[in-house]
Length: 84
Image (tube, rainbow, N blue to C red):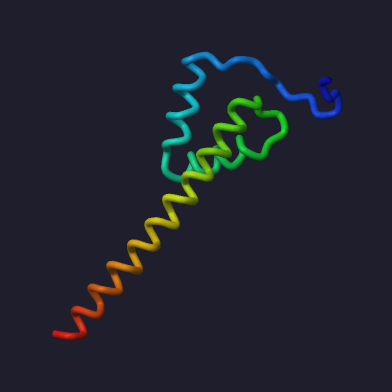
């Protein structure tokens, strides 16, 4: 049964809306802010909200992987520089 207390839009987004959403999300700083707004705003359509949450999760995973590689290879380069 549908819960009436948490009403969210379930309209299907058109291809134009998705293209605009992805374009705006790809902008460097503005995109991150928009994805955060879309992920946690209550008036955002549910399919865009879920996409934004998934995008944030991927951004976090990519950031963690980048830091691991930076420290791993940066540390090796630093140690190689100290050894010579």
